[in-house]
Length: 118
Image (cartoon, rainbow, N blue to C red):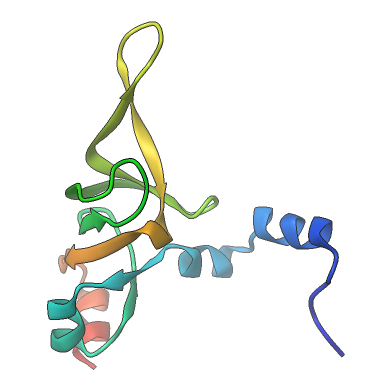
């Protein structure tokens, strides 16, 4: 029995409404070559304080710290990535987590550090 639908409308709905467990997996990104060799893993979840490099889109090549994560939509905001509003002022641009590469990790969390040491 298959547990997914072939109808696009149902698939879109499943992506929009994620359960709490599925949210964290939506915010994972690839590691840089140095980090892959050091921690022997290809992907890792994004957290506030991590340094990322944008690999796709209009802001390609920009490197900065993760300011905020949006688990529901699978997007993040990066320091220095903003756009101007029509009435003036600037707004941070939300970037999809799959379009960035982790270059430096925030290892303040003991649980995350232990997970990487295994």
